[in-house]
Amino acid sequence: MKFLELAKRNLKETYRDPLALGFLLGFPLLFMVLMGVAFGGETTPNLPIGVIDNDHTPVSQAFIDETLSEVPALEVSSYDDTATARKDLKFGDLTAYVVIPKGFGE
Image 1 (cartoon, rainbow, N blue to C red):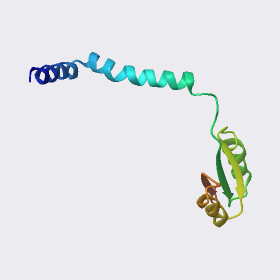
Image 2 (image 1 turned 90 degrees about the vertical axis):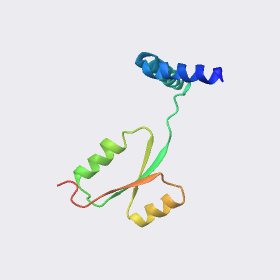
Image 3 (image 1 turned 45 degrees about the vertical axis):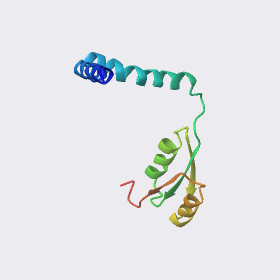
């Protein structure tokens, strides 16, 4: 019984002291981040995404070329319609697809 009382008292003291609580929660999180950075590896995931450009303007093309294609983790593929992209998404060939609507470049 004394053990439970002692544990309860120690928990109360820890929760009342913000510095102790910060160390208690902060160090494990910091340690996980540091270990993840140190041993996480340099591989980037390949996430295949589809793009359906319904606008066909220089602005939409620039969005695809200069924004989506510049993300190293993305493999961008063009699609003509949403049905084909939806089918590939369903079968796991795509992670996601983006539809650029008509009027995007206005």
